[in-house]
Length: 158
Image 1: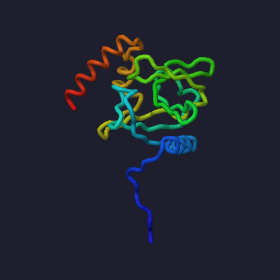
Image 2: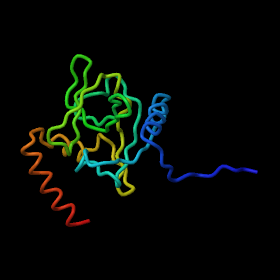
Image 3: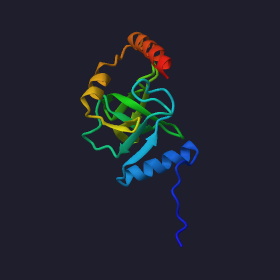
Image 4: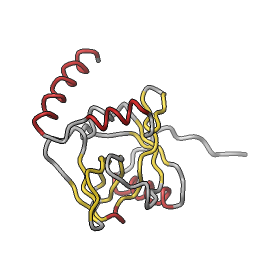
């Protein structure tokens, strides 16, 4: 008799969940997680989008890529690489105006290779995705204006 069954949703504390993600990615598995929070708005929306993560390679870690980083204690972030210099990685969420995180290269647990929205999968090499992330401003003033406009339009249509 087979007692196994599929579990669609299992609520785990972040420290347990991300340790499991970290372990599976380190073993070479592709791991899909739900996006939580709004720090990557408008590119990734918490509660709607998913990302597929893999173990980063030395040559894949570069500016513009979205990575999962373990910042110490039980703190993990899924943010975009702003700069890599002297073994340090500077990260920032697309929806953040000022906040930056810094970690060591070895604290980057995974990199996002696919983004899933409305059951459609986008590769990070997708031209539209690349263009949009390349055009997204670094300056807080411009980012504030675009986020304001995006929220007005997005909230109006949801």
